[in-house]
Image (tube, rainbow, N blue to C red; front, side, top):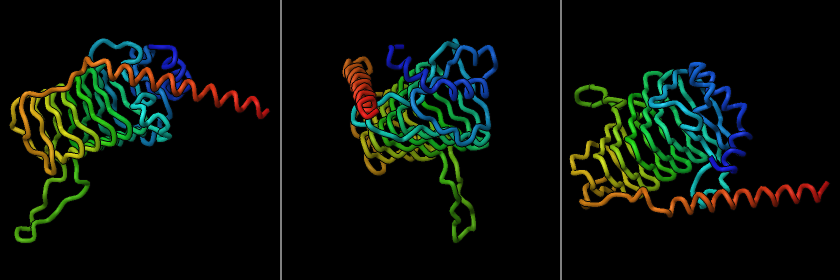
Amino acid sequence: MNKYLLFKALCHLPKAIYFNFHYLPFHQAIKMPILFLSKVKLAHTQGTVQLFGRVRPGMVFIGGNGNVLYQQATNCCVWANYGGKCIFGSKISFCDGVALEIGQHGTLTFNDNIYLGPMVRVACYDSVIIGANSRIAWESIILDTDFHSTIDKATGEHSAITKPIVIGKNNWIGIRCLVMKGTQTPDFCIASAYSLLNKKYDVPNYSLIGGIPAKFLKEGLYRDLHSHVNDIQQEHYAKSIHSSEKKSKIVKRSLL
């Protein structure tokens, strides 16, 4: 962890301590595997949290990171667990504004190396599984529920309110995508920006899907997760925020 992230983690340490010791057994909580890097609103703290793999400090970062376009975002992250289960792997990073809502019977699973961009929303009332090495771009919404049922006028039958969602490994969900109940994507899948995903996509791995609703567009593509562009963005973000905070302190001192 670089010095900037360490500083942010220390600023929000009291709430992170509460969160870890509230949800995890002592031998795990003492290692502080879940750290807050910005403001986090703990709206509801029922249910359970589980970790898999070797438990170590900073397995999960909530808030603080993000694309430079969102460096001035003031939206805090929101945690609302109404009695369900959240499962974390390692190398999980949530940007500012991410909101997670877990219903009483929901199970939300983040496998290893997951990135949720700024303002991503996830509502899990059944089951949402996000595969390892996947990226969910900013302002995307994942809903495994309609929050209500519809009635067939002819038969009187009620529609299913929830259906599980499975996002495959090494997926890239583009900006402002809407992932609805029943969505299943293959491994190494790219969903283009502003797409509506609402079914099981029986397409090959390394596919590009997109549109409203999303359909198969092209085969043989996948995101380069080893590109140095992301590292450059994160470094610039950290430096710019650190610079703005220093300027703010200087201004405050001059006013005293």
